[in-house]
Length: 268
Picture 1 (cartoon, rainbow, N blue to C red):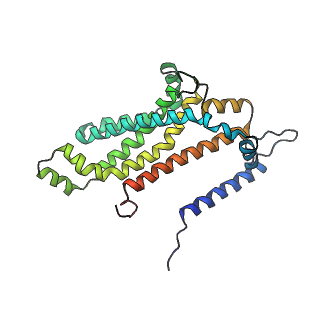
Picture 2 (picture 1 turned 90 degrees about the horizontal axis):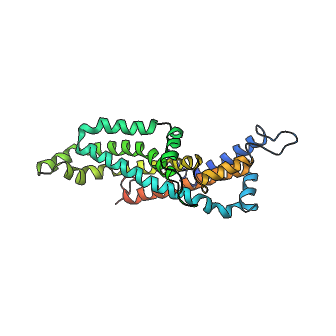
Picture 3 (picture 1 turned 120 degrees about the vertical axis):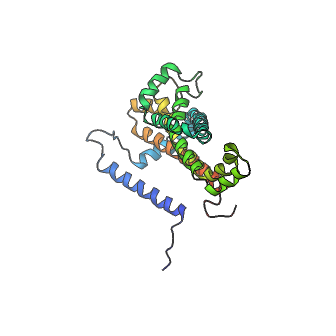
């Protein structure tokens, strides 16, 4: 008996509709506004739609998200660049694996709120209104290190032993093995780690902005909306964050399909 697999777009559509229905039910029952009040911590999807499109707040979304996306992008490049460099050091000097792995674990276990508070004092925020926050960039880079270091080391270690021996027999050293064998074998794992780091970097940038020292971005906007008890606005910003993160995640996923087509079972 042949099983028919649901297309990816249909699964995403069904999942999205299900989430909206569950959200609507909870907003109308468990989080129904108290008598004599219109405030609800969980607004209905209709209220969020009205805030975005009827009230016209969607028009200013880019000005809100532009500094955050810039900080996330810069932090993403720095964090993953450092992580790939550390993974390369492990390959060239295997005895350093324990130290570098511990560094990656420590960077993941650090309380990001405490580190963010120190970063605001040391690095500050945005130099000019509309510029990305230095603290947001640092936190976006920090949260990317662990997954990329671990994914890269595992990928480099998955290289075929026979291929490595062939390179060694023909006089190739560790660097040649890295370029000719390990990098090709590790490419799927590295790209998957880079894809996972996309929403992580965005979250780190938002947290960095939320700590202050910046006047524009997602963080200050959330603080302002929360102070106004504008739950529809807060949820709208949350949803837009999810949309931007998913789009970036999908772009990196498309890059993976293009660069490593053999992983998806397609011809190169």
